[in-house]
Amino acid sequence: MDARGRHMLVEYHGADPAVLQDAERIRGLLVEAAEAAGATVVQVVLHRFSPQGVSGVVLVEESHLSIHTWPETGYAAVDFYTCGDGDPEAAHQVLIAAFRPSRWEQMMVERGLEGPEGMAMRHHRRSG
Figure 1 (cartoon, rainbow, N blue to C red):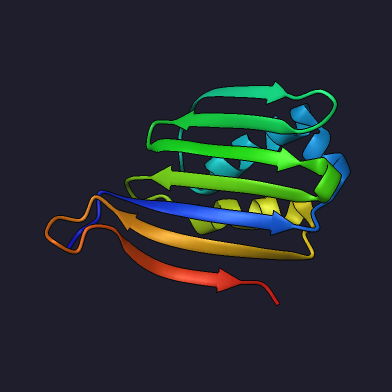
Figure 2: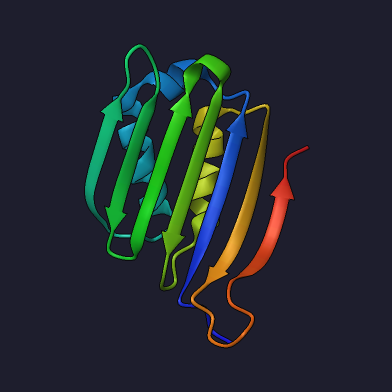
C-alpha cells in the first residue's frame, strides 16, 4: 500500500557543540538539508535558548523538518516528515557532514497507510 508520507527520526550523538549552538548555522543547515531532500522551503522559525541550545522548524510545502539541540552534551534530535517524492536521506547526509557526530541512529517510518497495519517502520539504522 502507498504511504501518505515518510517520517525520518534521527539522533546525533557526539556532534560538534559549536555547530549545535550556532542558531544561524542551524538555520542555513536546515534549509540546505530540506532543499537537498527536494523539499520546498516555506518558512523557518528558530529559538536560541539561554544559556545554550537551539530549537527550530522548517515548514516545507511537503510538511516539516525540525531540530532540538543540546550543545552541552553534543546531542541533536531531528525529525523530517515529508510527503511526495522527497528524499529524507539526502537531508540526513547534509546534517551528518555538518554535525560530524561520533554516532547516529535513524528510523524511517511510513505514515498514513490505509488498513489495519497503520504506521510501518521502513528501516532502523545506526552508524558504526
